Length: 228
Image 1: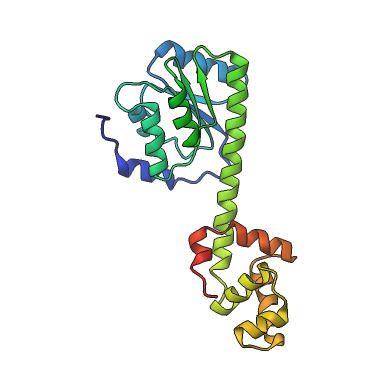
Image 2: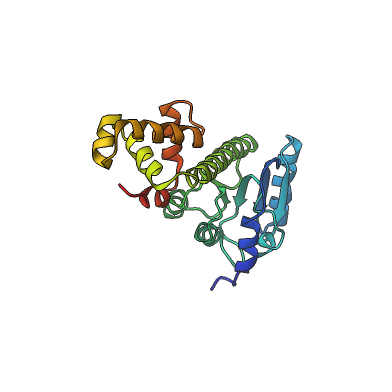
């Protein structure tokens, strides 16, 4: 059975700010020689890296809030790489993962990739192959974090809208005309225009296309929890 993991500690690192932090590659491998070799390779090309011998050791280090990616060995004492991947997902910790293993097989690869792994490499991997995978993983992680920040910002703006303004916003992004919105909501077209103008201002959307993108960035539970 996998060793227990300190849940409170993992929750704490999720709340740590990430703004302005340099990408960090986290290497988790119980093989000392391989672990240090990977870190030296990354640092030789200017990529900041930190090494751990186990998942538990990593969690105790408080670095999961950093942007970047993770290189995980599959078979390790205690929690395996695949189990750790599942643990991170279950606890809402989103990071790009590269699996590096000497014991991989097709079912294992499929499982890892379906769970969101960026790459599944077999030891020994060529230096350039690993570096290319790391660059892709970091780019994917930064993109996900950027999308998450946009979603949080737009959700905060959305919360400033009145219930009626939210109804109008939903109708506008669905392509409804002012007269159609007025009919559906039982208000005048002039009132629709006033609400629409207020929505655009509060959502900081100069054009309808920006408003549509803001709506699409909202979490599903926020969009679905609206009337209309």
